Structures are given as structure tokens and as C-alpha cells.
Picture 1 (cartoon, rainbow, N blue to C red):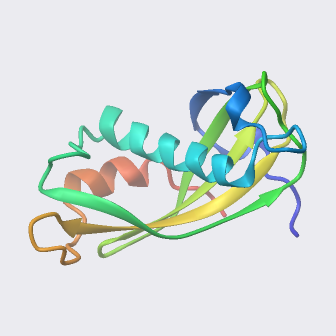
Picture 2 (picture 1 turned 90 degrees about the vertical axis):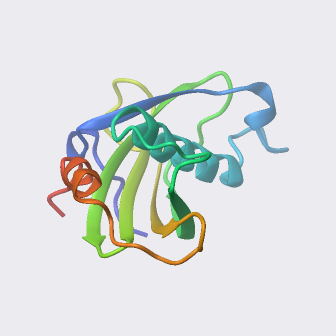
Amino acid sequence: MTGSPQRSDFSHFHPILTRPQDNDLNGHIAGATVHGFFETAIQAFLVEQAELDVREGALAGFVISSAAEFYALPAFPDVLEVGLGVTRLGGSTVEYRLALFRPAEPDACAAGTLVQVFVERASGEPVALPEALQIILAGLQLNR
């Protein structure tokens, strides 16, 4: 396990309001829920910043890989933030680095990677990222 990412590593954050059902039987946010938080942050960014129509647009992004490491145990009613960054842009693929933070805390509770492949919705075939999307995602590029 590597050290916890720092808030200062990220320039974009997405707020997450936890719910009672987000907790697992041990009273902490379930691991699968953290993966959902990460995907929510990415989809929100793509809708809000890149103006992608994630439901019916010609371009669709599919998650092909995700992993997470946990450093602390957040739980409802924590208010959380997902730090979102890009570590690799290539062809039809984007690799994201994400971290889950409690507000104002410098160390992440959890961190992970997620790889997304963009395809033409009609054919399901991978397509090169449009230039405008590449530029927007490049703005999230991390220095790691």
C-alpha cells in the first residue's frame, strides 16, 4: 500500500453527501460505494465541464478497470469530497486518479484509479477522444 494522496495533489473536487445506507455492516462506507463515489465524480465532471450527454450522446465512456486503497474509515454522516485527476490520456482511454477526502483534511480516506474507454455508442467501437474533450481532461493532469 502506498501513502495516502494529499489534497494538494488535486485541483478539482466533487462533493459527496453520504447516506445511512452507504455504511456497511461494520458501520463504515462500503468499498463498493466508494467506487460509486469515484464514478459519480467522473460522470459529473464530464456532464458539467465537458458537456457530454452521458445518456444519449454519440460518445459513451465505459469503466474497464477500477481499484481502490483505504487509509481511514469514513462513515455516514460524513460529508466527503472526491479529488479528481488524470494520469494518462491515450487514444480512446483515460486513466483517472481519485481520492476521497473529508473537507479540509489534507490526507485522503481512500484513493483509487479508474480506467475509462470511450466508444461510439451506436457501434460500441472504441473511438479517439475528441480534441475538445482531450483539452478539458488535460486540465486535470496530475504531476505524478
